[in-house]
Amino acid sequence: MELIIVGSGKMAIAILEGVRKSFNVTVVARDVEVLEQIEKRYKVKVAKLNSFNMHNKNILLAVKPYALKSVASNLIGRANLVLSVLAGTSIRTLKSSIKSNHYIRVMPNLASTYKKSMTTVTGDENFKDVAMDICKSLGKVLWVNSEKELDIATAVAGSGPAFLALVAEALSDGAVKEGLKREDANFLVQGLFEGFVPLLKDNHPALLKDAVMSPGGTTAAGYSALEEGKTRDSFIKAITRAYERTLK
Image (cartoon, rainbow, N blue to C red; front, top):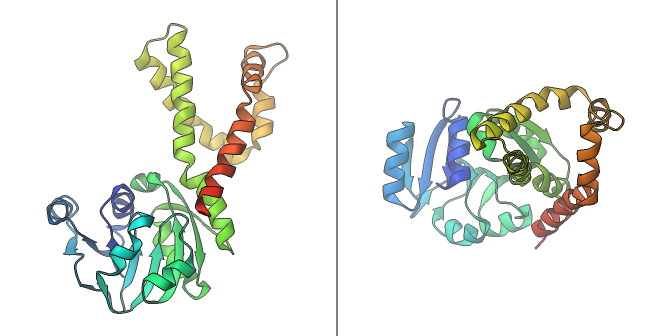
């Protein structure tokens, strides 16, 4: 299947890393020098954005939301399918900006590079299977039935890597503060995150917490400090703020 990736930023490259072995990919962008680097490194076809003919092609739009109109003005014809990764950009806005027979919104994250993305998808149900097949090459996929649900999912899985990075950094900083070498602290945190995935898969988070927290123990002491800092409340508010941002 032919897939045209429009964009050359971090998300576009992350998606390219995930799909290039499964699809016939062409990368379309403005910067000729960047396109040359992509062609050389990833061994895919490239094309300049200016007056690119997208007629009856499957387009994966991976540009910044503010650049939508500018990018769309350089695309000629009517696409068969537009898959958009533009956060907070509704299908209604896409329809008013770029011509296509079908529209799908997709929200992957940077883990696409390692085929470990948690990607949320919604839109034209006639192309659900096609969209899901494309996104499965990036990792796990969740189809939701509304754009509101996708925007909420964006706050969790799209912004989530940044939130988890904050947790990882803070844990490492805490260990260094108490006297552990930075290299060792980072190694411990990496191992912690890696081992947490299977635990979370088979257990509710509350049960994991209860399993670790013994009466009057170290975990209870640390957990109390997190509650004092309203950590749980802060994370809930972070999801709310991120979701609200998608609506602006």
